[in-house]
Length: 142
Image 1 (cartoon, one colour):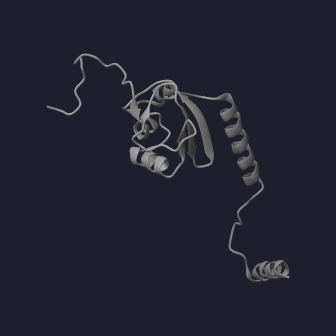
Image 2 (tube, helix red, strand yellow):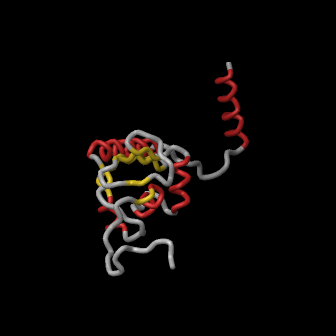
Image 3 (cartoon, one colour):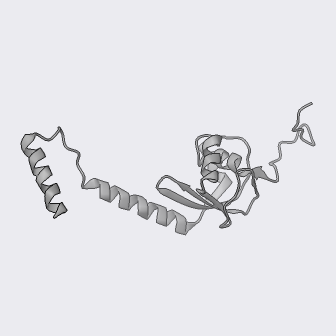
């Protein structure tokens, strides 16, 4: 006998609750379940403004705040799944607030603009350039 037995053998109904780390993995916020668990442990995920444990039960209607790298998502759980499916199915498990989407896009545009002006040098600085760089460093120290 297995530990998990469905009440109806032919039933494929969605569960009433799912573990938080499992839902984050199934909704494709994180690539692996262990990374999702680490994110929850490190405070990168909040449920209703509170810091949860990875085993916390997620229900439809819960509001999550997920920080992933430079991005912050504020989503409402609209569906539950304990298995990872295609991205099109994963997008149906949550709805992102309009304010969250706009803020995330604005921050991403700002990061792109900051990176646009920088051009990495094609080669290492030569002797003259190193002296100029060193001289600039000395000016800042004064």
